Length: 260
Image 1 (cartoon, rainbow, N blue to C red):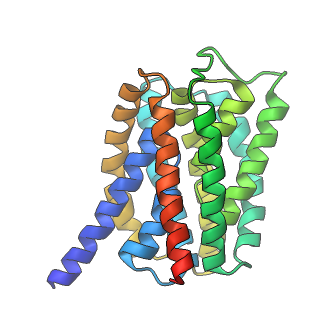
Image 2 (cartoon, helix red, strand yellow):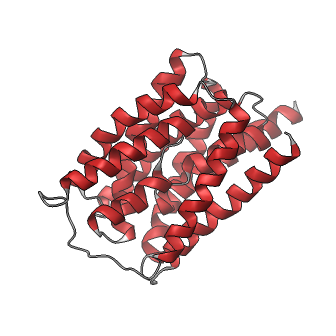
């Protein structure tokens, strides 16, 4: 019995970490959710971890989105274009990802994360333009980034936030706090698209997903408040974003090389 309580506690705590990260940096939900499910909770099948995390992250993203919407940090037009194009890509990516060995998928995921982290650090001093929006001039660019991010999101079984945030910044020039809030629309959309695909293949642990969602709801509220505070300091939110990516990527590569 104590062992069961401990395991349940670990699942809820893991969900809180995922939710906090989602609220704080818009991305990172699945960056944390997949390795936490595999290495801490003990989910043996990486595909089940990917499918379950996609569902939990999507729901937690909606909780975080509500917080950002109240703070008026969401650019809805950009979110609609990015998310709608991304959903198409996510279905294509998910179909391809299930055909690849799960452990190899996690290693490729980690390598991609390092590349994105480096790009984020290089642009950490760029504060962005608060009035940035989606218009005729950049709509095609935003749609292109959305489609590409969706493919990668579905392929790696991730909410895609850690790709969406830099994608929104690159295509519109918006500040990172706006990109974080706006990204949650696409994170939820991508996550639900991936969930449907994995659910049809029987790769969802519903009990685990429920516990992650409960913990994540609490974590996302705290994360959103922290994001607003950190955004006042130039580059600190971006640096933290990159730091999370590097730490988890290194750990995943280490685990893959050990053969686990």
